[in-house]
Image (cartoon, rainbow, N blue to C red):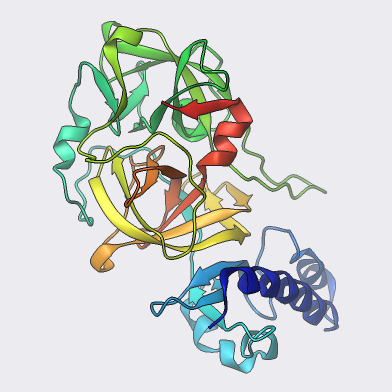
Amino acid sequence: MATFGEALEALEEFRAELVQSQMSVAVPGAQAMAFRAQAGEASADPLTHVHATGVGIRGDGEFVVKVYMFDVPSVQSAASVPVLSKPMQGVSVDVEHLPIQVAFDRAAARKSVAAAIANPAQHQARHRPVPAGVEIGPLGGKFVGTLGCFVRGGDGAGPLFILSNNHVLANVNRFPIGTPFTQPFSAGAADTIATLSSFEPILFPAPGSQPRNVIDAAIAVVTEPKKVKTGSMLNIKKYTPHLLAPRPGMVVTKAGRTTGVTGGMIRAIRVRGVQVNYGTQQAPIIATFDNAITITGNGGLPFSNPGDSGSVILDQASGRPVALLFAGDGVTTTACDVSVACARFNVHPV
C-alpha cells in the first residue's frame, strides 16, 4: 500500500497529467478555457467533470489520490476516462461525488439528525462562563454560528479572542470591525461577549479573475474576559489547546451549535478546488477553496449541519485542534486547516 508521502507525490503528478489531458483535447470557446483553468480555477472541466483533488484514505488504511466530481453519473462513468482509471505512480485513484458545499450558517432553529453524542440543546443555551463549542451571533442579527475556541496572541500576552469563521463573525466581509457578538444568539446587548477584530476576506470570481481561498476565518476580541472559560469546550471530555496537523484517517470530534458533539473521520486533506456557496440555491455566490479538508460522520450520519460553522475540529485521541469547520452538504463536511487560520492572525488556542 502507498504511504502518505507517496500519495502526496502522486497527487502532484496526477494534477499535472489531468491538466495535460484536458489541454490536449481540441474544444471551442468556453470549454477550452475550462480545460486550461483546471490547474487552479473554479469550474469543473467538461471532459472529466473533476472539480477537486486531494490525498485521501480507504477503509483499509491505504492512502490514495482522491478525485471529486459534482454529479453521480460522472463518478459512475469515470472508468471510461483514462486519467481517472489508472494508478498514478503506483498510487490508486479514488473518484467520489462531492457537490457544491454550502457555508453552514443561518441555522434558523431547525432540528437535524446527526452523529450526535451530546444534547445539541445544551450548545444553544446561555452559558456563564462561556465555553467553546456554543452558539454565538451578531447583536440584533438574523443568523447564528459556533464559537470555535478561544485564542491569544502568539506571545501569550495581550487580548483574548474568539476564533470562528468569516461568514459567522464578519458576515462574508460585510460587517465593520467592532461589530458586537452575543452568547447566546439573539440575546440583548447585556450578553455581548466579543466584538469583531479581524477577518481574512473571502474572495469571489470577477471578470478576468478567479481567486482562490485557503481559510474562512475571523477573530473577535473578548470584551468580558471574566464571562468566558478558556481551556474548555462544551461536552468535550478531552480538549488540549495545542495545534496538530490533520491526516487522512484521523478520527475527529467537534462541538457545534446545531448538532452538539459529533464524531467522524478525515477523508482527505490538501483538497484543491472545493466550491462553496455563500449565497442561496436560487442566487448562488461561489468561492473556491484550496488546502481544504473533507470529513464524514460516523455511521453514515452528518458530522455537521447549518449553525455548526466555526466549530473547531479536534483529533479525538489527543483533543488537539486540527481544523476549522465552515461548510458541508449534509454528507460531507468541509473544513480548513486551523493552523493556517491561527497563523493568519498570529494567535494560538488557549
